[in-house]
Length: 111
View 1 (spheres, one colour):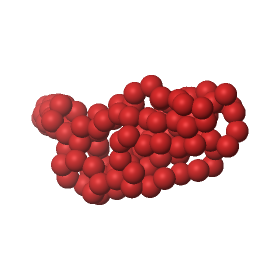
View 2 (view 1 turned 45 degrees about the horizontal axis):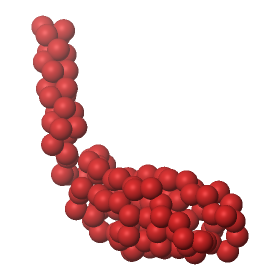
View 3 (view 1 turned 135 degrees about the vertical axis):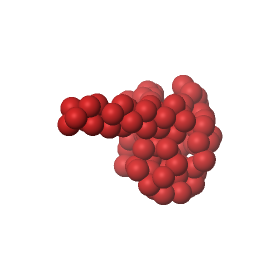
């Protein structure tokens, strides 16, 4: 009886986890179902503009430009001007109302 009891709980847990993966959990479990995408950056001189999208109810987006600069609460599209040429990694983080987050990065070459 103990083994059967364990198998039943395992099946129930599997269904709960699959439900979260396909439908998204809405409780405080920490699971987040963001679909965050970034387009290739548009570069004009030393100014870069990044556009993209997120499929989820979000509160804010934070941008880290790779040169020490950061912008909070700025949605798509976002622009930044670099002081020096170089290769920079731009990190975008989207936050929901419970402060769960998802991030994506894209590199840009400034000449």
